[in-house]
Length: 580
Image (tube, rainbow, N blue to C red; front, side):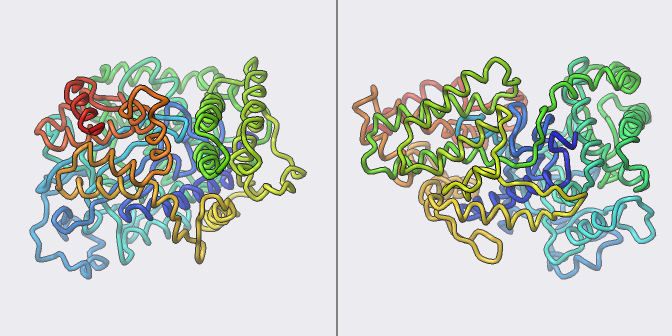
């Protein structure tokens, strides 16, 4: 597993790049944060840590509404044991929300918990999660004086800094226990979870990957019910109870088996058919099974089956690991955007050539991102790479270098130190991971490496100070107008799809060029539909937040991604108006 990049240094570099990407996002909106497995460093891809996001995974982007009217106030007594750290928040005179079972009764406008953006050649799938800020965290038993834990000093220090620091970033999302949908907000502990994930040793991270693989790919293929979050919750309980000396490679499978036994015991300890286990950080809260799950007895039997057959159940995992050493974190999902920017800035590069080159690059990027082994596809990958390199002019060397690095890596041909001496070597689309032992590289140090890489990618126009990105005019000009409209919408202002289309066209150089060359297509609306298809997801936000059927819409959508397929007449009307 170490050869496949399941090391603390790889995880730190990936997390560091996520933090740098968060800096970029916050140039557009200060309330945006990157959470989830990609930012954690562990679990975005179950077969290696190389900076890629698996097709069945995504990047969580959370928008935390900080407006005072939208803030959730948790009663002082609920934070029992930590109240001294909260008195300075100045909200004691405000009526608190009712808190129970990890949830607060909503006194604010409830939004859909997430809006899914499909994976594309431009970027991995993204979940936009809308959240309300909370004045403080509820009671965290782990931080009680005298609580005995096996968690490392680094983890405990990070947790105390988040919970008891000057500015706790607690927030709540729209998610409720069965039967209370639409009336509760779930208190999120994602920042506490990230504090733990950023301080895992390599063996602890490997343990999490194996448990997540079993839950997501093995047990869930036999029964329906377990959420992948269960794997992370199990990790926290194991870290709490397992001495440091037991976290060694030779003991890895025994620890996985022990965690599955704990899961069985927790499921059997509750009489509720919907309850899976107790939440680690919020001990009064329960982690529920998925909606419409199989019977709990069947789920328990499936977990026991995996515990008894670990070697055979993990065989597909071991067989899918890359055969070469993964010691770099790719920035591959930036390659498509960088190439497009560079081509648009080539004065002698025609619109027709741009479309042709980007179409070939699209096919190459999607092939690179495929989870299937290269095998017989290596010939096709090689040909696509040659086609793209032949079409890209000399003035777009950075985009070419990014795509080339990703394609060679996919085929197992690692970028060599000799290639790092190229004129474009500073922007080859990856960050090399140190070979040192556990926790030798902090996420903060890794972020500095990522920021430096982005600054040296000059076509992006990134400027930084003190290891933090402070400006990127191209990004702000391209996406700023649309993000500004979405923020207005979230604050309660009415925003139409036409306004979003016009904002996209006014800010995006790419959209302007496509609109100016509309004669090469059937209509301008066709261009907008093909190049700005994420706007359907914005329309989905508008439709759901302006009606009273929020939870029903979420239930029906499930894992589907994209817009509202039943609103074709309205869509046609919008396109006609936009064309006018």
